[in-house]
Length: 247
Image (cartoon, rainbow, N blue to C red; front, side, top):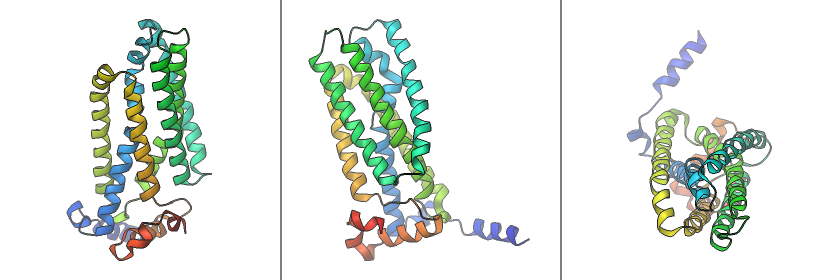
């Protein structure tokens, strides 16, 4: 009976998004969630998942070969996801996510350089495919799993559903933005597209390093109290110190 009444009480404590966003620290958490969705999508994950054949065709690879090569995208994505699940329980969230973004930046720079400087060479297609797969490895192992995990951890329990919904909705908007703009930009500036992605991911790295606190090793109740303290208006100095977040 106690469990039933507890569940009812918990349901009664749920609040809507208007009420939740009256609190400064919750508004900041929501902005963090939206920013993480931007970072996850602007890694270019779905540009690679959707448009790898187009990229490879620009290297001179035949249509059939380019389509077959995309099988590698799926295989790397599946394998990297399992590796990411293993990593989640063993490494700090911030370190994993920041390391993944570093890897994505390097992969984009290498892919852009390949398409720019090896154009027409015999190894262009293979090098391009290799760097696409490398980018997907970092994304699916160290960025995407961390994004979805953080969506389940960051928000206070009394408003978790609505705040997670708002953050993930924005993430899907970013997904659609990348999917719509990528082929247009690729056609317009060619290899420069991947240098643009690298720049965006450098900014995402700075955003994560500046604003994301460490969440590993804390229960949801302790994490909520920690985040409230960290993002409260009364403690601006602490909230600007990334080192203090892990204490």
